[in-house]
Amino acid sequence: MLLFLLLTASFCCWVLAALIKRLGNVRLALSEACFLSRTHTDAIKGIAAVVIIFSHIAARIQSSVSGPLRYYVMLFGTIGGIGVDLFLFASGFGNCYSISRTENRGSVRLKWLLRRTLHIVLVYLSCFVLTSIVLYLGGYDGTAKRMVQDLLRLRMPLRVTWYLKVQILLYAVLTISCFFEQKIIRGIILVGGSFASALIFRRLGYPEEWWKSTMCFAAGYYCAVHKNALVQAINSRKNLVVVGSVGIFLAAYGLVCIFDNLFVPEVLGNLLMMVGVTLMAEFVRFDSRAAARLGTASLEIYLIHISLCSWFLRVGAQGNMGILKVVLCTAFASVIAKKIDERITKPLNKI
Image 1 (cartoon, rainbow, N blue to C red):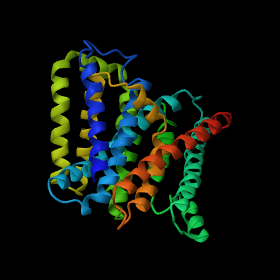
Image 2: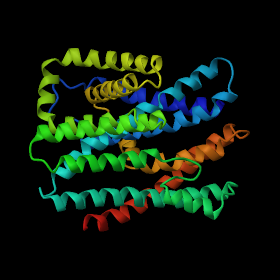
Image 3: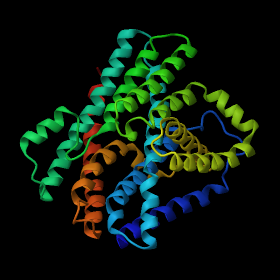
Image 4: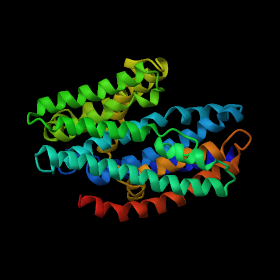
């Protein structure tokens, strides 16, 4: 697994170098204009997308790795969840601003929900087609019937796309909350809806990825609504927050590892890990342009790579060549999918 070691080490060195470069620019005080800016949130999503890819690759290859390298691979296999936490946090933060810019009428808010849902479904369709082409060129022999079944269930080939369904559900919860004028009522509905969604998924026996990160969406909305107050609170206790963000992340990571698959510790741990990482990235101004470009295509990267990992890293094909195929094909197909996304965005905005 020399290629995995090389790729992950290079990625860690790149992130570390970017952080060291920015340590001298740690803000003396946060400002409302710069706090969680678009470039910053895109950069966070870009890093999260790469971490998720490495996590899924690690989960596929760890059974074929032995010795000290196995523990290294297993470490990457356990940190993928934080990437999804950051995705949903950024989604809640950005969509709060998006829906707040619409006219305060029920029909307009429903149109917003329609646009967001259509957008995510159209991105899914383009990723599905591109991924299917790559898979068939790589020897996949799925039937037409299976492809139709996957499309009807919003699945990618070989994989369940739980993230799409959870994201659309949270869009709906956000839309319902915005029917009310009072911010406190909106917050209660959004937090309650996010928590209820997690609890229902858990009760129905869905895997933990369906429910452990939903509260991060509500946290993103809360940060957008109370941005001024948060900036003032952080500035008044800056040194404590800087140190505390590291402590929060480490404590939360330990909580998730110790109480794996338990509802309250998992939900709380993932929420706190997201808070810790977001604060650390904010204070060192991690807004790498390369990471931000990756972040703009994070959904495409996520949808495409999950199927490619399942096929190119299936049992018996978990070598360096399989890893290389996943990385290169994901990069190539994601670029095309993003170009398609840019073409469909303008017409959707006219709805």
